[in-house]
Image (cartoon, rainbow, N blue to C red; front, side):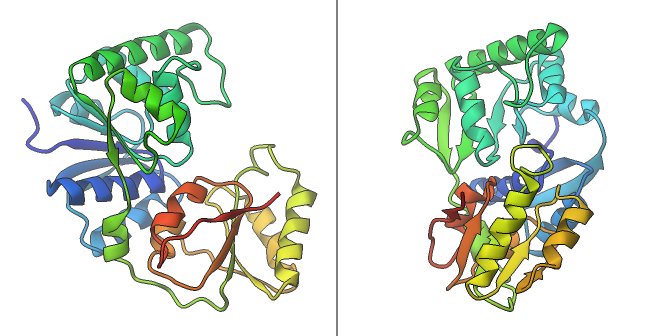
Length: 292
């Protein structure tokens, strides 16, 4: 039996926000299954409170086999996850829309175009993982050839990765976070200097001492509001909280939702998917300065 709703499968808060954007753009109520993790229940509740066009929001662990098997279209947050690759290889969906996932979307577009392995950049294909990646990519490209693969993203043909994917038949739809701006509930911040948290320290991509020094330099110019990344360990956040001039705010929501509609902010980042997405939700839209 085919579901009456497109089925959305998201694994991060940003993907959740992108699902709300797509539902608003299409004017179609969508059934969402979301992976339980940091900020996910809070993001679900906030999106529903703002009027997201969701028929249901169902928390999930693992692969939602029953939901996917009944759906005529999969709307997927993480096209490179091992779980998606396994599900796609087994169930072979009839249509797929890939949601925005920040800069990871660039890697996915490149992987679809055969410019790199169909794998997240921090992992290496081997054995069964590599086979499933090849199977998933081949199936997605078959969908693209018949116009049934869509990429809904802030990125478009201005990026070489997306031009290459479009050349293979992937349909590109622009995500400009219109619904997020329209439904914004801007918070009152104690200052207009904002530094975005990062998971790069936890991932071993940024030296801890270097990051703390960067936060201190930014705060020294007039104070700073620090918004931790959802994967920053508590001890790292506590260390930042102790830096003079820093006010740590933990909204429990993706920054795209939390900061939407605010104006007059100076925002700096040490490396985050929000570097590309936040520009579309601020008032007026503006770029995020990258530190380091």
